[in-house]
Image (tube, rainbow, N blue to C red; front, side):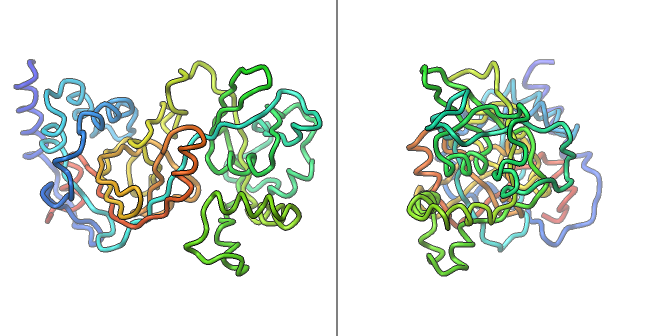
Length: 343
């Protein structure tokens, strides 16, 4: 079947055979005309990112639009023809933060400079079952078991590597090792930024990743206690065969893309779905992203973490972002109208 008949056949199937469903009070379908800046975005760039992971979306109802994505003659028309913009929890303001892939200094053996290990997943770790806390692990309770992947030169870097979930480690001989998320210890993430606010050290608008870094380094004893306020601990794996130009693998185990990939709460937003973002801070974004990652602190329908890329500049930009706005999920027509048939 040539592309044009395929488009007509798929569109007819999506429009005419959507099954009936009960309306959800917290779901609203809107028009593309209601997306601020929609016409000005680079839809081709978003489509290219969507193609990288759409085949991995678990819901089989996405398969037809994924197949068509690889034949679409026009990116904007593809999205407008086969998707509907859906807001989960309309009226609730979104919260957008940023994350990045840090570049850190490390070594394969400990010495006077490189003293802070990152660990591989222990064999006895059971997903979802609480294990040793961050404080217990960093006291050395699993040291010397051969789980150490590398040693870093800064305990604050270790902490933020856990927060980001992946990183590039530059070794003394110039080689670069890339590591990614393998597992966590089963404890819920606690925000150290909020803890600093609770203690009266800073006001909410003053807290950023760089502010936390600086405070911990100026106050090493209290800083260690602050980092241990978060009992969650991440274990890593070496990433092999990842192209230097690519981003780290996200939750869909595919490389993610700077300023086009977001981390979401998959309880609301399907992994692999296109998501329109409108953020009202700096940078002010009106952009079509793709939900390709998750994060332990990313909870709720109007919550997303934007991947800024790799390195120090990306880290500075990501660390200062805490902006309101709005996020709209683009769902295939059949799914959208089943969730909100009155939209």
